Image 1 (cartoon, rainbow, N blue to C red):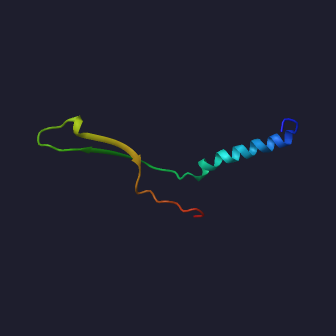
Image 2 (image 1 turned 90 degrees about the vertical axis):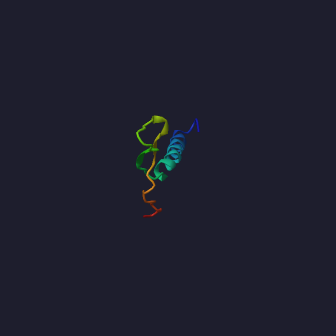
Length: 66
């Protein structure tokens, strides 16, 4: 490979294509923010509050070839 520049170029193109596969094969996601609080009369405390970020569960799954 060190003596053949064309072979080296083909090798690096192949490596770049392999690294691109997970990127192209990953489905896009939507961010979902959530705020949850346990209510008690006349009391609000951050220790009973949950803030979360996750993938949106209502996002459609795209089948290959669609």
